Every structure is written in structure tokens, then in C-alpha cells.
Image (spheres, rainbow, N blue to C red):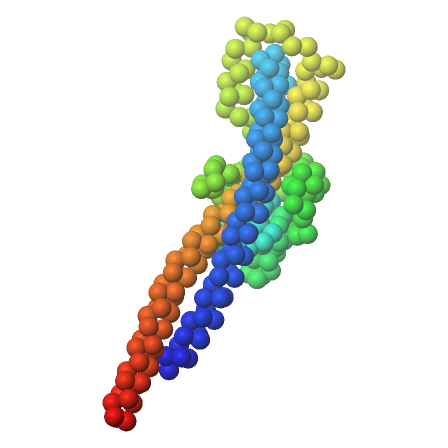
Length: 298
């Protein structure tokens, strides 16, 4: 029996060792991908900040009556909303996909309670699988995505929600994604992107426009520049969310694989100790049998 137990433990030790090698390799791959994803997030934030600075400069000089755009028009009654769900394309990343699914479910229930219809645009294989499993309806699902979020069909998604909003097909557009804060901290975020609202800092900037008016020259006109920047800012929100989503996925997977590697190491040590004890017990038993046999012969 001890021999059978030793063989089973040896098989488990080999299996755990192989699993530990796989999880460690996945952790290293995710760490390398995370470094690139973090750099992309930082570069994107710099671009967003620069674009926001242009908007602040423009608002200091533009006539308040011109601070309007079709994408900024609020509806008196919200009958239908669209949600853009950005999630992962693979598993083995802890609770990353589960947290997104829980947020989606809560938001769908909230809209249903208000009597609002919902159309969903899905980005990533995991949100798409969840929608199909739960039998939720969706307009389009982008599942076969490349590793680089900049090559995702974000422009098409942006144009789709803009056209639907301007035409009155939907009254509000929300986005669900995971905000990347650090390697150990990612948070699922629900953000309304349409009707577009100026940031608080941009609104405040209009109060001091008399002081700095005329500092910047806008061509062909301030109103035209304002109308051109609003769609860019909206598209940038979606692109930034995609980059944050991918960085969060890599961070979650790296953390999960690191934890799995440590757990495999601890389990390996416990099984190795058990293996040694059983082996020692088996040797002792065999020695006792030999000694007993020798005494019986003599």
C-alpha cells in the first residue's frame, strides 16, 4: 500500500513541477507584455493631456454660445442606451473577467429597472462568450483581436456610437473597462461617454478667458476647431480605455500566475515531505521484516 502511495505521490510531484514551470513561464511572458502595455498607456495619457490642454486654451477664448456640439446634446428622456464593453481575450487572469461580467450584469439590471432598452458593443472574446452564455443580445462583437489595442477597430466603434447618438437611435452611451492603476491594482469602471461632457478643469478654464484671450491663434476658426476636437476627445476616451484594459489584463494574469507558481512550490514541498515520510516508513517496515525473518530462522 505504501508502494502504491509513493507512486501516486511521485506522479503528483511530476505534475506539479510541470505546472509550476508553465505558470512561471506565463508570468514572465505577461510581465514582458505588461511593460509594453504600461508604456503605451503612459504615451496615450500624454497625448490625452495635450489634447485636453488645447481644449482648455480654446475655451479661454471661445464665445460661450459656441460651446456646443451635436455630441453634447442631452436628451430630455433616455429611452435607449448603448454600452461598449471592453474585456479580455483569454483566461487565467484571476478575477479580471469575472469582475467585468459582474459590472455588466449590474448595469443591465439598472437599465432594465428604468425601462430603458440596451444595445451592447463587445470588445474581447470573454465578454462575447459571457453574453452568449447568458443569452444577452448584442449588436456586434469584436473577438479576434490583435495583441496591440491600437490595431483594434476602435475608430469603427467610435463612429458607430457617434452616428447612433446623433441620429437619435440611442440617447446615451456608456463604456465598461478596467482602469489600470498599478500592477496590483485595477478597477472596473463605468463611464458615460455620450452625451459628451467637458471635464471640470475645462469648464473652469472658461472663467479666466478675459485674462489670456488672444494668446493662441486657431484656424480656420475657434468654433470649427472646437467642433473638430470634440469627436477626437471622444475617440481618445475609447482608445485610452482599450489600452487600460489590455494593461490591466496583463497585470492580472501576471499576478495570478505568480500566485499559482508560489502555491505550486508550497504544495511541492508538502508532497515531497510526505513522500520522504512514506519512503522512510517503507524502509523501516522492510528492515523489521528482515530482522523478524532472521530471528525466526535462528
